Length: 89
Image (cartoon, rainbow, N blue to C red):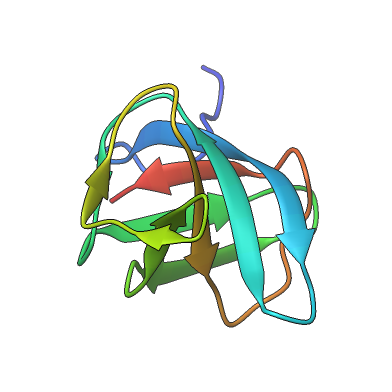
């Protein structure tokens, strides 16, 4: 039996494409819907934390929710890396 990334109740919602260290913001290319208040698990080779979505922007405009194909910026408290996967918990 193979181990899956993320817990069984989690589903992938996107992948980190960039991290803006000065602003503490990760850019995510979404593959599923994401909204303010959702909890996400960011997982990669050296990244593994859970956070809630408190602030989300598309092209510097604040949005309450975004869907597949959107590229969003989300404020985070920890460093992330391009290629890290984002799971909705």
